[in-house]
Each structure stands twice: as C-alpha cells, then as structure tokens.
Image (cartoon, rainbow, N blue to C red; front, side, top):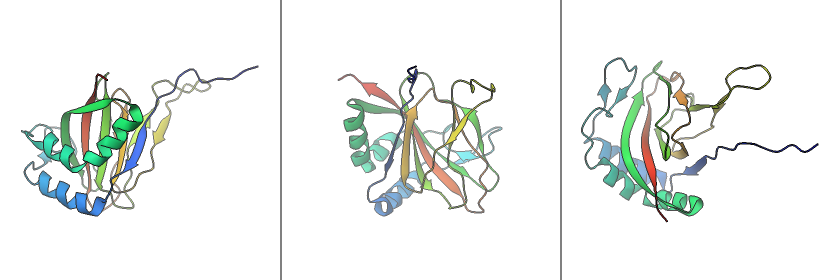
Length: 176
C-alpha cells in the first residue's frame, strides 16, 4: 500500500537581516502611521487609516528579505496592502484570512518572550475525529512568516504585560 500526500500548503519563514538596525527604521517609519482602536476590534491598528507611502517605505527597508522570497518562489511580488497591529495584554485577533489569491506576510516587530505568535487553521478537519487542527508557527522577534492569503489564522491573546507589535501585508505574484 502506498501513502502519499494529496495536498500541501507551503509557507516560508525567514529572519529580518540586520534586524536591530531595520527595527529602528521600521519603528521610525510607523510613527507616521499611528495605530488606534477601531470599532469592535480588541487591538490597535492603522488598517483603517491612510497609509499612503507605507508600502514603499517598508519595501525599501526589507528589500533583501523580499529578494530572498522572490528567489525561493521564483516569481516577483508586489505589496498590495500593508498595516501594523499592536496587542496589549489580553488583546487578540479572531480567525480571519486575507482573500483567495496571493501571499500574506507578518513581520514580528515586537514579540515579548511570553507572547504567542500566530496560529494557522488547517482548511479541513481531522479525518478521524472531525475537529479543527491548529498549527502555531514558532517565531521570534524579527522573524517573517509568509503564507497563502487563503489560510485562516488568528493571534491568541497576548499573555505578556509588554506590547506585541506586528507588520502585516498582502502581496500578489507578478508574471514571470
């Protein structure tokens, strides 16, 4: 009997090269795009604010990392949307996805040691007990995670007294 994998959902992780320097640059860049609580969201974000110029500034700072990604996936990428999110103690982000096409990225700008990363939800239930399967990706501050936009994911409550802060973005693939 032969066992094979029917489906495979790739994702990529990579460090932010020279993170200490780039963290300062990114933090300075984000000063022009302040976060605030919006509606019923239990976290602060600038997603509903004007972010003109953020994608260009961000792309310039992490140009090396985007280059490594395009080499790996053998295609160019273009950032279509970008925002930052901050989570105080107890704040979380409910399950969501970013659409059907392209890739979504997360850069962990501030990640206290006792704060959880993002958990991803398998798009089909366990075949033996019909339960959802969660995959928390182990991350560290400065790490970047790239997943297909359609993958459902969430941020569990921040357990740290320190702020957790991420930059998230959506990318489309450019024709080769």
